[in-house]
Image (cartoon, rainbow, N blue to C red):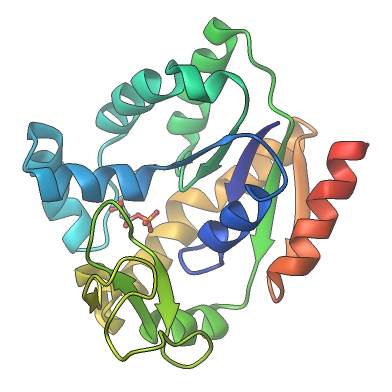
Length: 215
Ligand code: AMP
């Protein structure tokens, strides 16, 4: 299964990806997670990406495409992948098309998770993320609180508000999504790859994708 998860920040792409991984053998590839790992490790890529990330902007396409060319060529991606947070611009989608052609991989589908902006804002602003970069588990103080305040249930790491999850930066990220990423809906629709799901429940999306795979 070679899947792209599309949707605004906070639409629930990560949650849906994790649920799908309980049923299918695929690599979960989140560009946000890879970039945060690079920032934490102080790599050259992390250094170049950090200022864009902190202000809610997009990391330049060339950096992302170089990173993904390498990542998608790794062994675990050949059996299947779920792309989460990539592509985010039309040039990235075109670059991905070329990479997949080279790897002789055909996309199974693009899942567009549709959630109203007000719901997204509320969700992100009550989100907490595990600061352990090997974990990065996500909690929500309203809907999915950790057992112990500010402590990760899975690894005991400290839970934090991500620097790019303050109200001002989230609004900026939603603007960037509208301007740069939402055109991908029409892009993949024209290719006949797009499947739309209302994002209220990850269970409904899970069932829908499973149906699609049977298809
Ligand atoms: P995410 O965790 O997917 O919301 O990503 C966090 C931040 O990483 C974004 O706000 C961007 O600054 C950067 N980022 C992640 N994926 C991409 C991408 N495909 N293209 C450009 N920037 C990205």
